[in-house]
Image (tube, rainbow, N blue to C red; front, top):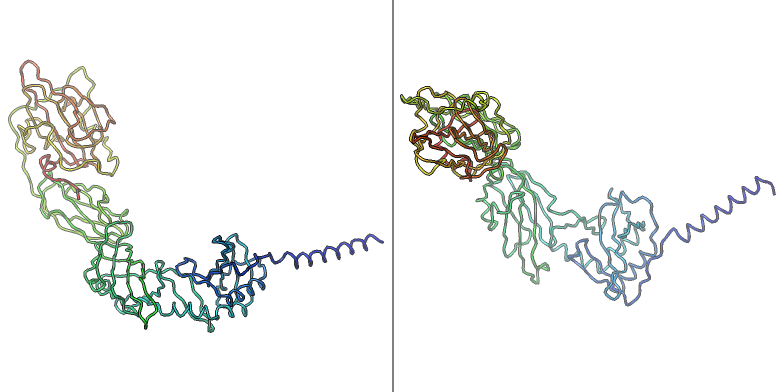
Length: 519
């Protein structure tokens, strides 16, 4: 035999082997079914299970016998039914029947291990239109539907216990695995107050619960007839859960309850609120924005002083602080995606009285000194987070000897609104609130000084100390000892505390009265 003849013979043999292999192995063997096996038909979530009769078993075996292995089944997406074959209470196989996603009557059976087989349309339709399927879908067809209507727009949800729905195609029923919770309806202030729920079959009772996404406490909870009370506080995604109960009757086959879930995307215009319309110099204002669409882009501007960053106080609620520095009438402007507004504010002058006593703080000539101006110029806002909690406290447990609107002759301007105490014996100075020690050192005019940063640009400065008890970078809390004031040669010693917000001196008494940015 010539070389070419050998090659031809080999090719013919290989072709015959390939054909034979395809006939023998192209279709994997399916476990044989016997009378002792139970076959169940169900939905994917197993909430409805029906055992097949012997007639349906034969139809199912006929389907299994006619399946052909497929290589590419990515186009099959629409679930029709699931099958479970049990032997002595143990699952033998669990194929799922899918329909071609383009709507044609082509089918495929998928197994949990990834095997996929094509099926003839005639056999599948024969099974789906059997007596058992008629009973199953008659039960499904009697299940109720729920319609949510907002200003003429309706969203209808078909429900069988958990929200699956069916549709009829070519005299055959197919169950599509579309969960109701994937539905989303957008509501605006014009229509969410007129939301209405109706059912194709009147339930015995209906309970509605609406919760802001990510929150645990419901915004609304009550009967469907009370939906007019629903008033979402902010824009955002809300979860609406409707639980309806029915009682089975002779006329209505369906009994039990349905739980519907859907998303409500609420679009509500943001609201801006000021804590006051008039404020004294050295006091703070709170600006609150409720329901901004993009809170990261919020910012405030105040020509009468300085504005701080916005922080999140609650779900959909953001606030910032404004320090009133100059007297006059100004506008507070808030900008950001979905929140632009201006509000007028009046800053009232608070004159400072200068006493004749000379400025009492003296620095040690041998100690390294820094100017207060130089240290202030190096200030960094640090974290925009809020470290303090509740109201601030005085550094000692008694009222000051000189208020924030009094100053010594020759007192540096940058130490305005400092509150002063005169110590006649040794005093321990405590932190006014929680924060981080920003500075410890000798100032050319403030003496030994400790500065604590409380977040968002708010500092407290403790002047005239004799000894520091903390180091820079140390975390302190309210009433943490910061330093000592020593009395020498029976002469009283003065020390002072100043609050500063982004370079603006503040009234310490205001901070001691107000719990800023608290709930």
